[in-house]
Amino acid sequence: MSTLTGIDILVRDKMAPLRGHRIGLITNHTGLTADGRSTIDILHQAPEVELRALFAPEHGSRGDVDEKVADSRDQRTGLPVHSLYGESYHPRPQHLQGLDTLVFDIQDIGCRFYTYISTLGHAMEAAAAAGIFLAVLDRPNPINGIDIEGPVSDPDLRSFTAWHSIPVRHGMTVGELARLFNTERKIGARLTVVRCEGWRRSEWFDATGLTWTNPSPNMRSLTQATLYPGVGLLEFTNLSVGRGTDTPFELIGAPWLDGRRLAAHLNDQGLVGAKFVPVRFTPRASVYAGTPCGGVNLLVLNRDRLRPVRMGLHIAAALRDLFPGDWNPARYDRLLADRRVFEAFVAGAAPGALESLWQDELGAFRRARRAHLLYD
Image 1 (cartoon, rainbow, N blue to C red):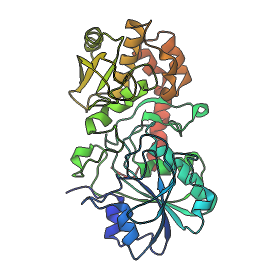
Image 2: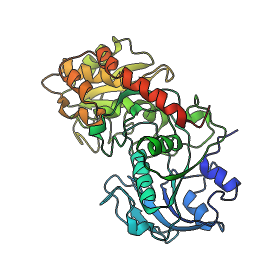
Image 3: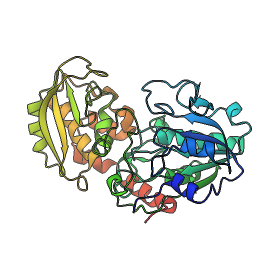
Image 4: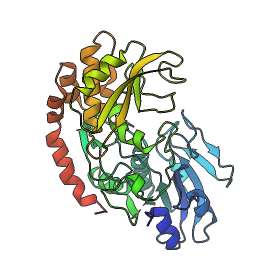
């Protein structure tokens, strides 16, 4: 049986617990029922609720924007679309007037610096300040809800890509994260989570029976989502992570990079679940657009045993050690968001030593999250 997401449950239960509410909907093209109907259209047509406004996260309400998002009007419904990725990351007070509830329905991918969960946090703060409800229509964590990995971001390094102090791979759904945010940030949101049915924590997205919809323009497969917590960490350095190719996050490279040398080194590191193949590619857009690059193709051999953040650390350490005059690690801390780990990395620490630095914080997070988990 296919997993039922929050919107499926809402439809089945005839809009309980939102009946009679005037709603603002935070969603995008991933807000779909199991049979492919848009959450926007469903709430707009439902007689039990009144959908008054839409709010668009990064990439826009239809998921096709790769830049700042402007306020607009939805062509299908005629509703105003207020940007949450432009002048403000928060829903603005004037746009919440006349609403009873903000509803959040977006597919996350299970990684701290994927910004939809930051949009959720900002929405919770805005809803609490306005004295209105916030309802999360929950969805599965596509890279499973068990595996947790990576440094826990420093509280003083919070940003839109590190909204709360959680590890890179958090192993939670957006509904569970909302519960954790509400408690740990003392937001005071009047929160409702409409739970999924038929999903178990151990399941990856391809076990749900749901149709994959690219959550953003460069997140095109479950394989890419699996690799992203490690490869994405390299994003702000002078390295292509495959944007502008057909397989973003499955490739890394640069004009100065010797792919054969890097692949041989990484294949000697004993990284379980992955293999590295030398390649050459020319990105059509983004970093090194139009410039031939040497690099490696990252193959996932066993996703259950692969630790993508560990793999990403090994890639970063290899770039640091093999190409010290070419790779610039100065912005590697941007998404790592852990000052102690970054300083040890720059000083030359090995990947295993770096991993040991975050184990205490990871253990504390693992214990803290238990109270907010909704699924077995």
